[in-house]
Length: 262
Image 1: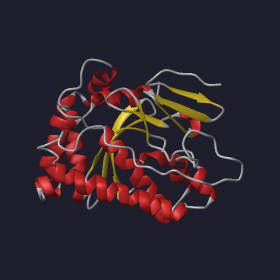
Image 2: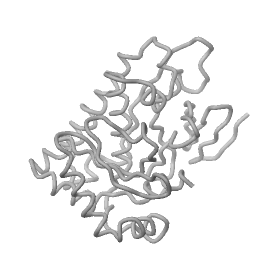
Image 3: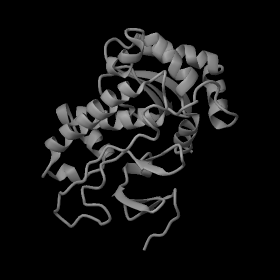
Image 4: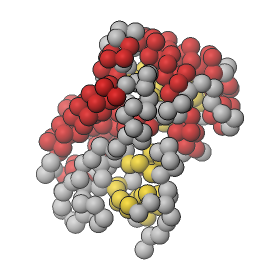
């Protein structure tokens, strides 16, 4: 029997039970128990995984490959990130693109054994269309959770601020490197802050590629596909990256991900 209080995730027998107020969701925990769940701004657990391949509230029966694929709700209202990111952008980006990837993934996996895996397991064991759609589901949820209204600027005192200071020389240098990486990514992709071998570094990835298939642990990302910024910033990707750093970064989310590496 597993017990826990609101906002906690308790691992048992390879499963994670996420307690979020009155709701209890059961989902597969990823290998090594890292980043199976992402904690929202409110401190509650928000799953970034496929929810266990079973209907809510029970474990799947042996040999059963039913699934309940859902895109996690946004952790803020669609107007909350304006003017950097407008409601119109989120209506297209979240409702059409993000949910579209999940619809595609469901169609690719429905009725197959892979449908019982966690999203992270699917990403790490797939290629082609399955990988692209699964990775995009994960990447987008990670992107949404890495932003908050009134965010950005210098990280507050604590482990993240110390990390940024140690490995980049401070927020200004980090911001410059982040923008440079985003501008250097030709075409579509992402900029990531990852933690690897005891050090933070900035990388960029093409298309749907994700640090989940590397030794690095993702801490933060910016989506630089054009649909992420074109409505609000037109072709000015640099302005979007600068505004992301100055006004959107959710440093609490970064801190929680960093804590997973300790």
